[in-house]
Image 1 (cartoon, rainbow, N blue to C red):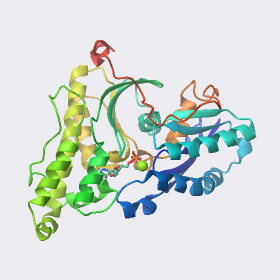
Image 2 (cartoon, helix red, strand yellow; image 1 turned 90 degrees about the vertical axis):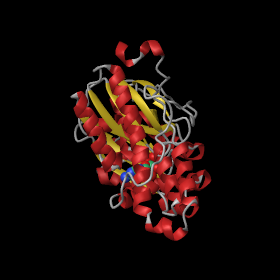
Image 3 (tube, rainbow, N blue to C red; image 1 turned 180 degrees about the vertical axis):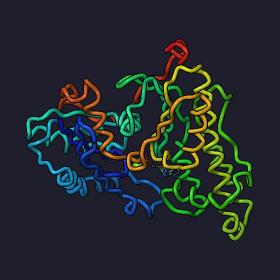
Image 4 (spheres, protein in one colour; image 1 turned 30 degrees about the vertical axis):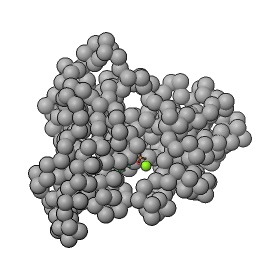
Length: 349
Ligand code: ADP
Ligand code: MG
């Protein structure tokens, strides 16, 4: 079975061809709109929607070409139906529906977060149930992945996502966009204990995240310094800021693991922030402490890509039966799962 996947929910225009036979990913083409958004220091939704319109056709053509297949070889067409920026999601869904209608194929709408959630499984058949830390520019969640199609959200951010915290921090430091990789690079030559930034909210057993405090604290720190001092201390500022964001992620993940009392069979990490090497090392250590394996999505699948969307389409039994149908409207605010109620806390899984 061959599925064409399309991803246009944010600032990557992406298409992929995925097979149900390993190696699953036959092609995975991502056109990053970074250059279009960089002058604004962040993603501008209207710019993104227009760029998707321009780039999607050639990206799909390339994905088919690299996979060595044509439209006639496809068995289904999948696209991100949400969550995401509505303009972009409409472009992707409309294109996918048009291809499916013209070729008499099922159209499958995929929840973008399900794509991220399952992307660690592209590396290995990660055993269920697993605890997933999903950290990107738009999302920051702890999810219990009980099985394909079965998710429970343990915690989410009450303000900024972790990637957003890196991006906004980098903007305050005058580093450019996207901030995560730039901060990580400078942090390598800085001291993580040089500045003391706050570690987010709440009691340790609460699993929600908050990153607006750390960002504000960085702003106050910068305001106390001259421009020359900021330049001179950039590595220390980056290392300390990164440490504060990562500590918050690791602490909540640890709390979720402890609360579950050994229920999880593995720990997974996905989303753009999963590229951060320090975060990978820290979470690997947490998993070792629990004696469970740690799986991180591969760098080529951590950011937004269509491979994870097409993969989610065929792996979910309800995926490619076409039940989403052509009547589906886009769902820009879709969530992956309801908040896990107290009586369904991990200990009861
Ligand atoms: P979204 O599409 O929701 O913005 P992506 O999955 O495309 O998310 O990931 C992009 C985000 O990941 C950006 O916020 C970026 O700063 C962050 N990011 C990428 N690489 C790193 C890194 N090495 N360290 C920290 N954050 C990173
Ligand atoms: Mg993105």
